[in-house]
Image 1 (cartoon, rainbow, N blue to C red):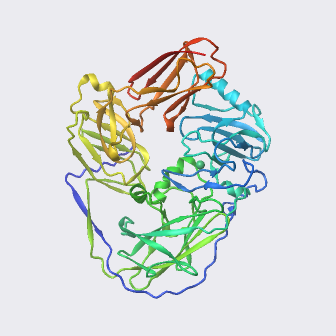
Image 2: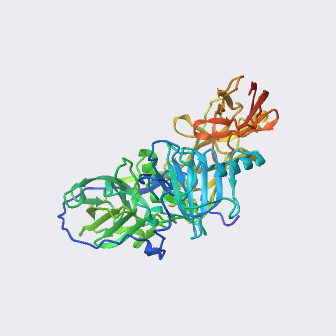
Image 3: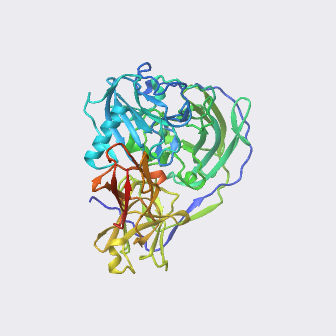
Length: 595
Ligand SMILES: [Zn+2]
């Protein structure tokens, strides 16, 4: 381990923060400004616009756009609606190529095909209900060979090939999809970076301009720490959008701005993401955000782009138009002073924000920002550790150890920490209140907790518990080392040691002793605690007469499913399913049935 920055202040300190104060009026003036062109040439990449076809027949209608803001990630593709309604629509190869990867998993992309094309791009088709017969046979053979439902397969070049327009599968709702649709991506085959598929000439009807909802104004101190943040509704005028009174007053000489905006397309009611946001300060291009491409290891950085606290507390998604110190995202061009605007008490700064969709429809907001005359309100923050955003940090007070790798934080953190005692029967350590869940963490951090009341016979059943909202408890890991229990976390909140002695449950759904003429059997499985961090998920294994059988696991519906495909012959059989949770509690289910 390299240098550790350890800041342990012995008592609670406070820092003073300047608040917002009174305002005075300002008169507006209108001037024209140039519009930035929309094309991909800024990156000197000419994406082929006549190579790929649409992966479905019929009009392309999107329920999700590339780069739109999601929780903890930017959307890596476009979500295509079924034109026939529901699952089952044929999914077509977007170009000639071979299947370079097939992945099956209980969550995430569900059933997904990755096709590699000779032009250097890879297309991805996710949440499929079925693979084409040839691909399905290959996947099932591999699942039986590996005795695993979830597989991540890399067929060799030419092993399974398709031509443009061939049926490769069916549109579905597998994995963590919230309704039948096709998640479609185009990636650079070399870097695996997803690129906006609409830069490849796919046509979507969109004559509607993006809508603007709110701005958020941040008063920043000379270290660019937020002193105060306020939201303002955006009003729609005849020639432009504006905020009431036209001028916002900021209790500091520097400000950052954020914008809540969505795009709307023809024939759908979905609120999709915009392609570009440009911000001008006194007519000078000051900041530009374009959802062209990114790398998957960067995507969690969305929590620096968004106002994370607004997302967590209000489900409100603001695009921050200035860059936090730890923001590493690749979406920004033409950014001056990291998007931070200097303000004056004497002269208002004109701020123009333009959002564009990829079809070129634009909406413009103009307002003025001015430093307020007096800065009287002071708020105080309690903290007892300072974690610099540009270094690793460790905290160790005996009862708790925390390690934050470099680039865990987007801003220097004044960490608030306290402990309390919870006398509940199942709490076996102090409860460590580690800052708050409104602050983002980019990387997994190590957390180790010392037990207080844990009987030795329960040590193997203990886990690091993250106690969230509405009494939700998540197992974050359960490894013993040096007398402390270790886990990992990517969020702040309340942590303690708890014990799990309750095995998972399994209930037959469509299963009975006579299964003649049935095409499937399903079971509902459940466990008392969810898992995260370094904890393992629920593990299962199903056999018939001692032979492994494929059970598809649908995590969002807590369901195991076996499709009878002739592998189990007619006659009397014994089914056995073993479920094991993260701390090794086992449930065994046995039943006889006839085929
Ligand atoms: Zn999607």
